[in-house]
Image 1 (cartoon, one colour):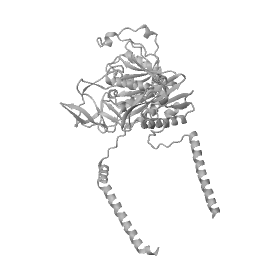
Image 2: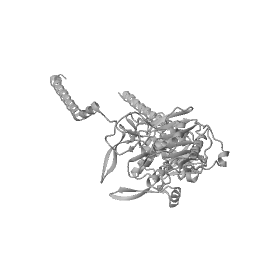
Image 3: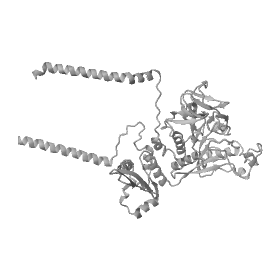
Length: 546
């Protein structure tokens, strides 16, 4: 018996030692090899491919210093979440040096140094022993590379940390920032305007740029070429017609490999009304030559639109269906700009027709549903339930062009610079004679590989909705930076509208919830009762035999 106890005891000790050995081995291997299962549809809790590419491309050590307090409890939880994210970063690159520092024991001189870096103390209200106290904590991350340093001063959560951290790494490691130019001179969307909406949009652009590109304005009214430092040109909602010389400069910018975004409104709204008149910018023939024809219409979508739009009727605000604010849910799943978008609202947009163009690939980025309708002529855009639904079909409202473009002015003379009077609309026929500059210039007839994005409206920029902002920033990043940050930003897009149930499906769900579930509970209880009665009978009949 003693030998048996010894043998069993030895087996138990060996089993425990084996389990401990396996745990140690698993822990050792996990520290060397990172493995994680993310079961969400869009892998939003996994470091994106874009981040992995950025980390793999690092050519020198990037130092990430986390200045995070360990108290109070909710700050400590955020610190652990940040550590989890950085552990995943570290698993994909050997060029990261990550340090966690708790500045609780720093003296005044060291805290002053942190403030000089742009790392502030953050105040929190904490309840201790039934008293409300104010505590100062640190929640910052510093990223350094080759003598440059950038700071995320306050990290309150990890919801958008991947985008902010990766873009900061790109900022400090980028050797030369590119330049994005917003065209001016035709009453376009002005990024420098002091209105609240413009300032908010400019702040979003500056945050997105993160030192990877600079923002500037471009004016072509003097007949000068677009500055060679500009890599991407934004034409956002012009309300005045372009002269031929201005169109020539845009054409030559694209011919030398420049990227461009054209946001062209089809109508202009009368002040204080919802009455629209056709808007002619003179860009139609230029864009048609490149491969996209503007529809010169306004599109309504009777299936997918903002169904609750506020309108003022007398002293009251009412909400009505408005099919002219199209909600796009049909995106190109192959294109980088839209393959992870879920929703986009485009107000008062026109349709686009993609044309066959040699050496140019055209992609429809966004389409209406099959209940899209083209409205032309008199534009009364007041909400109305009685819009006649005719000629319904799918319309493209945003497109991307990629390839080598032919110049619109390949077989034409260089247009003369418009005179000041003509540019101001005072003399429709007056142009200045050709300048010496025009005589010395040579028209570039074919571009290098480049890209153009065309959208049938610019109104979504003024709405400052997250879906429109994400679409614009995706387009801007794709043209200016490639797809380095698009996949990361898409992790924060969470608008997933429920599919509307119709007919039999809706009735089935309704009666299943109101009648079916209670009935299932009753049936389950009845079955359980009958089983218990059967068990009692069996015990009563055969219990004495056991």
